[in-house]
Length: 606
Ligand code: OXD
Ligand code: MN
Image (cartoon, rainbow, N blue to C red; front, side):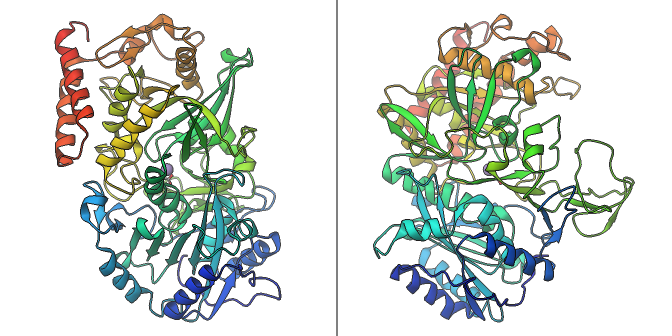
């Protein structure tokens, strides 16, 4: 469990890798004086250090070793049951004014917040080891790459950061000794893992993050949601690029033509599955490769958008992952994987709901209790996770380390919608696409605490991750569009539409290739569409549906249908959402809504 663990004493040359940079040394000293740890452990990211930390974690029951034959070099971690997901209600953007954080963020005054956090951190690491984790986000030779240092009192965090980032020596070298160099300061302490003392605070102006009271990945791997998205989006606007909650995939046709696509779906809506898609047999010769499964940093070059994945690993949702839903993820997590909150089988393997094969007759559930198929509780927590190096992915894109990134031909927005949203449609242009992203909605999932299955607007899947005023974020998207001479085409997809009797209409997974092919063909201008009120929609004949099983022509019509009544409600809901943002929405997007409503009025066929 994620409870405070005693200090460790590493052998010589482990934990003594101090950087040369005086600004880092001064800051670490300041945190040391405040948190009063027993000792400081400077990480270098080496294999030797990793082995040592794993051995210590096993001794202190922070990790459980899995069966070496079934899950080589893999471990299970159980978090405190009160600490299993991101806590949006305790996540703050601490800008000098509330307006800078905007209507979608919790705001807290920086001065007061620093003092409150200092109070909580005072003496918080007494008797414990304080780790200093240097890391970079982005390929080593990218101009977008950022340096971060995370101080933490959790070995689980150090081990996870080693998977999720390029950690250690590489960051120390890149930073060098310039005291004015740009780097992110991150401080994390478990405290006593008490939800009442759990705060995830971002200070964009100071490039600083302080996270206390949690051990859950999204709250504490400060490189990911905190730096790469919240602080990242703030820096991106200032510096003229985009930091987005998007997967990046490559798709190559049998003729050898390759395109890259970025897609924004809210948390736990299938980004990892889509990024690792295996085309159905009928699509022989098509290949999908993964650049990233969660975050895209994109900059403009030659009038196009070029994307890099800042991460080095995948932190994916486990339940539902199987050889049917994502064979490449199953291969990726076969080894060197850190599991959190899945079930442990009697033979030392891991299990979760939705895994291939029959459930085990007995297991230990994610809380550490006995479990059988008759148990009422789930064996794995619905937001249980794997952290696995991206190099485990058999379909890793060869350009993943390319500093200039990959050129993006299409951007896809999508969410879980039981109704209203057709399988796929294409925006008329960038501004219309920005509107589609800005009004995107999805049913909530277990990735964040709170009710599951409620529709919420989640602009560009960035609602929990935009580190500044959402109105300015929309404006930044519109401005970016003006700077692009060769912008990506923008699409919206919905794999989750249901029939009147509540069944999913679309098989999803590999069959999403059929939609992806249409998207690529649209980019190449070689396939048709019907021009509807909401955008270009494929007609049945525009999609390759050969050998598609389980979808009748009527169901297909339903999937592609634009129901005017549902859309009247949808447009009203867009208006309500914009209104709830209190006047920050750019007029161009208000106008887009009026145009959408007008198109429905002037059209008899939607
Ligand atoms: C994630 C999330 O973990 O979006 O990627 O919550
Ligand atoms: Mn995510």
